[in-house]
Image (cartoon, rainbow, N blue to C red; front, side, top):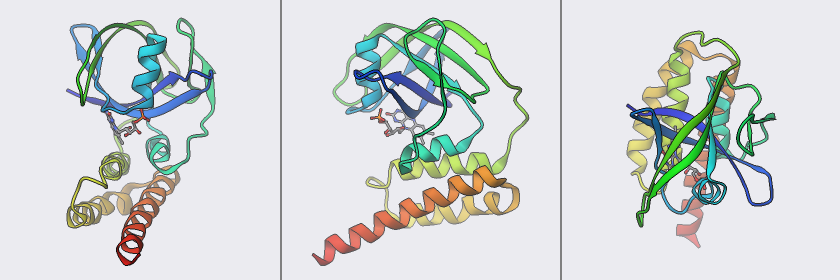
Length: 191
Ligand SMILES: Cc1cc2nc3c(=O)[nH]c(=O)nc-3n(C[C@H](O)[C@H](O)[C@H](O)COP(=O)(O)O)c2cc1C
């Protein structure tokens, strides 16, 4: 099973890099597999640590893909780095093993500290729709336009029926990103 989370990692200049990433449990250890090139990968290998942020604020997922990365942060307890201040819970990770690969290395981490900050209040379909749309946006350059548009049309139903203000804002950012991407492609074709 893969859980979609926000990974925070410490950049060389001490700032915090924020990126959505899937995490898998491997007998008590945590497996991350970032595609190269990746700033998260560079940071995690250099620092030997990372932080999993579990959040239901889908603006953070959509924001990472649309240039909105300015989320409140709070210092971690055991690793040198910061977590999302408003996450539901977070897990601090220490790097144990790297299996390098030209395309997608695997990083195995040991959880060394975990804290819960707020309760989980249930599933919301619009949140899932935003996560799915964010994945599509992260693959705009790889997927056919027709697939993107068909899937967005379907996901829109959950947004219209169940979204709150956060989900609506995140959805708007993603739709804008998709339309900018195809507008830039059309301009390139004309040039
Ligand atoms: C829900 C979600 C899950 C993602 N999971 C991964 C992942 O497991 N590995 C990966 O390389 N990118 C993943 N991505 C895409 C990255 O977040 C995105 O490409 C990001 O920019 C990673 O590059 P960076 O480390 O340089 O920021 C995911 C995106 C979304 C929206």
